[in-house]
Image (cartoon, rainbow, N blue to C red; front, side, top):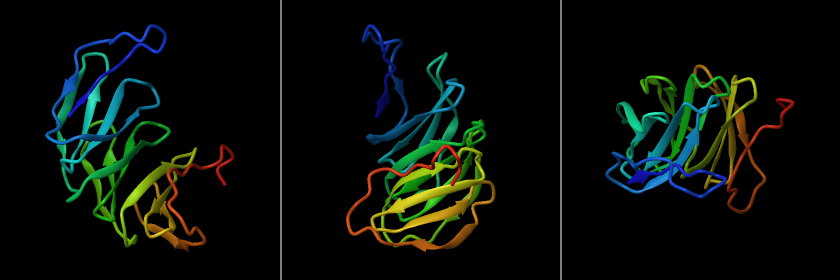
Length: 164
């Protein structure tokens, strides 16, 4: 229900907890410039936080109907992608929290991991349906067919630094 920032050298708490979620915080990600954090929760919302002042930016980002499992910022910090137990992804404005694309649908089970490509033009997602899917990182449109082959849960997806 809260986020805390810790000093990585001393282990000391940097500021008071950032509070606002009504459910457990499931996932967090820093913006590339370190100025913002996005959190996803079992309350089905995301929140943007200003790291310097430790306060929520705007209103909760609503749209998912089940737990938010994973969040990621685009490389330029202008967009956020979220994956949920409602089998969908959503694309958000990474500065204001406004919805950019309501629903990215196609998975048939919980979306556990999402990532932007290094240039921000693509998103990859992995679901408990054991498929990876590619999406347009700007419009949210589905790209190609699901990538299949895994027979067990995948915990994390990433793009190579060479964007392939």
